[in-house]
Length: 185
Image (cartoon, helix red, strand yellow):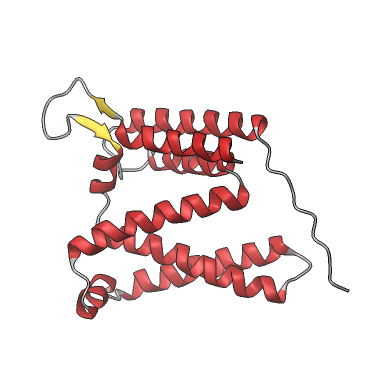
């Protein structure tokens, strides 16, 4: 476990340190993870974090109801959190204004949201395996590369494919061992 965690930490740290150069010079002359995160507006980032928070709380509570079938609890929690996030987005609820009125500044939110996402990624890596998390991030980056959210779509797709390959390699090399659950009765 120690070896797998340090490998994942090294890969994530390496991704933060990489800055890709483009042949085009101008305001979009480089692609890096920091430029990618800067291109996402704060409203979209807040909606993404709210989706993750709603999903976590709903999944936790639904696991108490659907004790026998964890997949059903996950699917229902996923669907409900998408609906809640969609409803917040469609009603035009001012999430940023809510946080700013509480007393959080824009700089604080720009600092804390990536840390929450990183903490969530580490938690998911411990829970499901770091290979699965890298595959998920690779798929997400691959899908995002077909939208207008990032400027250099080719590099985004390439990084997504590399993350998927590394995730598959980690999954095969260090498979996540299933815990044996024993009932107290």
